Image (cartoon, rainbow, N blue to C red; front, top):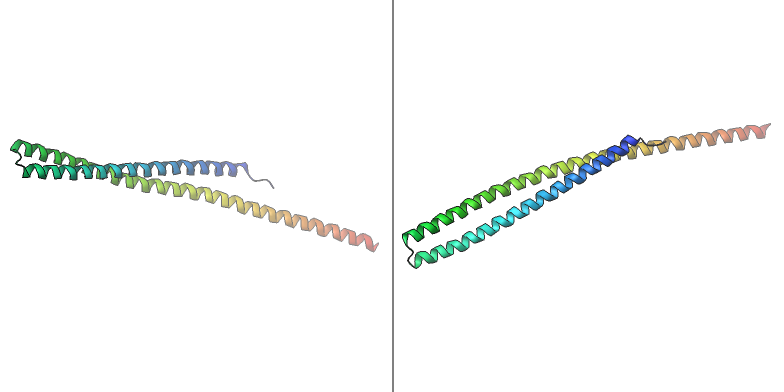
Amino acid sequence: MKRSPVLDVLIRLAGESRDVAADSLGAAVGAAQTAEQKLELLQRYRDEYAVRFQAGVSAGLTASGFCNFRAFIDKIDAAIDGQRDLLQKAASDIDVARDAWREAAQRQKSYTTLVARDDRQAQAREARQQQKQSDEHAGRAGNRSKI
């Protein structure tokens, strides 16, 4: 017995959907890694700038120099906060993409399981039909030999 072409189409579409979801997950992971790297870079830059700020204060920084240093550190801190927000959003995007990938993979698995079950049932039907034909043939041969 031949399998329904509809199931083949569903399996193919589910596989394509799973592949798209996997690509989205990969992109989300890449974006999160980039965001994390940028955050680390900003934090290192802030730390380096804070060291320079302390050195400037020790060397007798002017009031305007102090204000400029402080304002710049505040801007870096704001950038760090913004980058942390981006990193949290990226982590959330990974969770959403992972869930979408799992769902698509499960859908494809469900279809392939259905096809496998249908194939096993078709094979069992065919085996029963062949056994029945074999039994009928043997029965007819036995009847002929009695005559």
